[in-house]
Length: 334
Length: 254
Image (cartoon, rainbow over all chains, first blue to last red):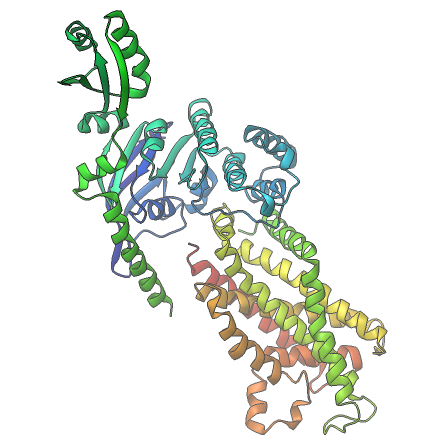
């Protein structure tokens, strides 16, 4: 088998003349954590649906763990796990029953089934709630249950469509940790979609920025941000900064220094992790820092850079486009 | 091709959901029993052409109402795919490495079982209310017809569910498909009373043979022979399973 978990070549999906995904091509290495980043309606979910055999591609080629998406659907279904954007749980069943349903659909034998269900429930810390009907679960618990479910059959490739959409910060962190661990320890190839920059940044080895069905950029998050120049940390200082500027300038992670009166603006990656060190260096040079300000490049900035439009403009026009999709789908069926 | 575990687990899911919605079970029994009670009592003293005196309207009505109940619950059972789509669970089913035929068979098995249980409950309550069955072994014959009716209309429900995008078309199916099928089946009156051209249309209605077969089994009175009814119902149910599976396979799940 090849080193690539996914290979996509000129994949296109049209809904009645409207192009939702427009000739995208990419490859994901086995074991990679790959992100699709873009505003709502950019074509992320449609891409996932095509790769997970739920939608037929209009044209182009796609391959998941070595199988052609248009021919070997059953083989692909056996080797992937999918966590959908919208919850896909039976709320009238308990958490455990949902997992049993899944395990049996994937043909896992009883002993193995019991063992794995126990494992995944522990992993997402839902063992105590296993006998509770899913309709009583909170949004975060449902999400965790779905991730657990996606893992029962030990997929080689896991698709996560907006895994943390609508969750509170704490739960989001939690889920990020699971995803990271899975990828690193379980060696699962993961493709996730998100429109949170920090999520893509924290998790992904590589990101593709998708807009209006097309890829506009694809690279490691750090390199994408390099294009924007990285975080800007501003220090308001008292005292003579010359020695300080010289010492900071010699640090290899500092990309740029500008000085306005009492304010030093420093460009770097992961600014929040560098602030303590900067203050330490300042103190050693007998400069007092009175105020620190950190500005991170946002999705807004990246998106603006690559498309020339802001995300909000784009989402507004996307709403119009989504209506178009709905119209064309209705038109086709009626 | 046919995955027994998948059929079993889909059936099991249906059973659990049904058992947990107890208020719905009670509700689903209320309508047929009201029909029986009020229609049966209201028309009790009337002489209905085509009905011999020793049968009586209530006896005539019981198999019809059982047929009606199976028609409604099975069609809804087929249409419940739409609810799964609405709540997202359909994607979980469709992304599983299971042949689409197995999915359809699992749904039909589940829907037919619940429809059958409800039909037997109605029959039991009718017996308590004084309905007499010609002989006990004919119950088994009646159960065969109940299953065939259920399978036929589960298939029909699946066809509609595959062609519809959401549950908004539901009332259209209800008013323009289910009610006409019900009224044309002879569940409420002997079909001999219909004008000739309507009688021809009623012969296209699967429920006609289902209800007539139930009548033959339960009260020993029918328009066609029981064998004739059986053959027609077997053909209808096979065709509808095939059509249900065909359209379901072709429909898009997202």
